[in-house]
Image (cartoon, rainbow, N blue to C red; front, side, top):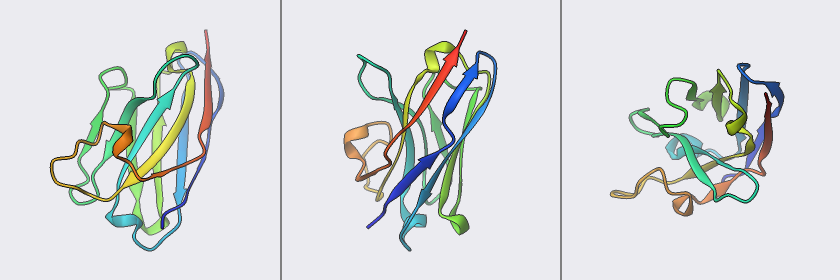
Amino acid sequence: QVQLVESGGGLVQAGGSLRLSCAASGRTFSTYHMGWFRQAPGKEREFVAAIRWSSGDTYYADSVKGRFTISRDNAKNTVYLQMNSLKPEDTAVYFCAGRRPRVGVPLTVWTEYDYWGQGTQVTVSS
């Protein structure tokens, strides 16, 4: 099974940048779709970004398009989320997640993911 460990969260001023990392265990990491989700206090968990295992195609929530970039390095068993031009509304706990590909299942729904990291706090001050 896959275990995920996140790092890279912290406090940053508006307009700044952070890079989140998610290190995965398991030999089958490269076969998993990977995604990032976030959850702010009092709000539901929401989709941020995802990357397919096969094509490497990426997907983003409208709120982060043009500012965030998801990538993966299968040799290092690591997925990244580069966050630029951060805004206070980006403040949340960020989770990485993985799941096996299933035809017809969207990447944007958190309940479809099988494995989760512990979460890392991102706080953006104005």
